[in-house]
Length: 184
Image (cartoon, rainbow, N blue to C red; front, side, top):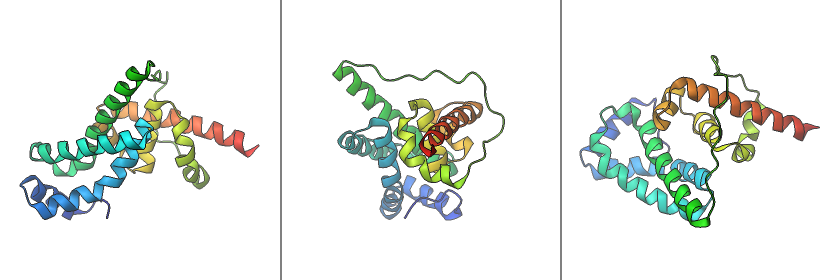
């Protein structure tokens, strides 16, 4: 079972979970556990670290759920928690290894329209997205693999919607370039 943000029953599930209904909490956490694990693994690059971070994230969600004011923003909220926790873990790991995290400069031009995609590109995203710069990779992953809206990604990453569109456009352009090289 995955969390469908468009299902009106899910907002009620979030509210019941926030008020301590154990069955609702269990259903809610089970619905987001695997997508969050995949997202955290993408950021940290390590399954063991991702497992540890996921446990912390799930605890944070349980402890903080009552503070979520708009249950329709649940997915964006949990991805914000997971993204921040994964980035912190990755930074700790990078400091311990004597390296610094890869920081990607912002693209110079912001996109106004959402780019169009062909089915081949969408099918190839999971294998190619890991090679994107981190800022773009996270946006592309949340937007197209986790199917969050631009507003949800912006909320999850605490960046303006224009930045989400720009990073998505830049990331997709890089993916297209890489696909063009593969096709040759």
